[in-house]
Image (cartoon, rainbow, N blue to C red):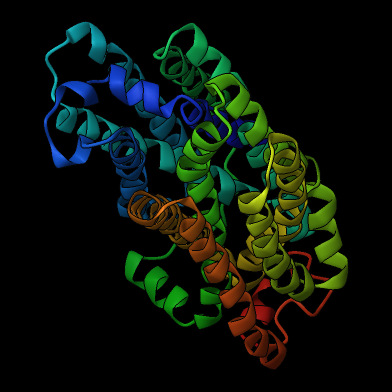
Length: 404
């Protein structure tokens, strides 16, 4: 059920991506004379940035409040329902007709601030479950990947019908999320802590910076594909929104379907090989997408990148669970999602700026270089600290690993 909630949130988010250029035009980007809307790429970039800036600003707040109160479900319900209001209000903008694009971006900030609460705390509830961390995070990864895999092509088809349709479907899904989660029981630890104690506890675990760093760079590549990759496929291969969504699904389908077995694999062999070696190969796979001469070869390259992403993602999230103390999981996962949101922002801003200024090829090189560089830099850290070397990471080892 928790994985279903994660799926719905990600599915809603990805519905908007294939038709992002058309959507921002309908929401008023074409009628606003501003540096934010100088081109379709600029307007699309800032529309995506607004949501993830809200993620960055509010994900920690949701995590701290949840850990301090010892509750998850009421905050997930509140975030989902308020996020639905945000999506529905955005869908009403064309009917109102007089809202400047800056106000649209503020609505997007509100929607993002609410949605990240539902997403991050649902992930935390998965951390609260017993069993192998890799398997639990693999379930989350399947939900994330399937939400993205289905959201992109379906969003493209909905855009063909009406550019506003993805917003309306997203609002409806988040209402369903709120209703579903209201039936779940909290599984938070029985003891609670003050906000200061939580922050101090996470601060004493500097090794959390390792999964955070990988989460940042991996989400950066996802943000890069969501914006620059979408426009790259449409400009270079002359694809419509529907076909673009299908091409994006070539990545997200294997990324989703392989999350659970890859997460279980990391429970057996440890986190080091999936994270470090997987990230390096993942970067090379992205480069293959950038040099693909045709739609067919680009699709094959996207499938390869999806497989490699499935190797990295659940192991990285499981490492957060391995390292975090039981009573600090909400804040620890919030930190991971904060790093991921910053990564998405980096993918939008760095990728969009480089692509707009220098072209698509340099943008691909920048993102690939960062992905490979972080894998190389962290090898000595993994070796020295033996992070994830114990294949029996099963929920009872989190505190011991964190103190190692």
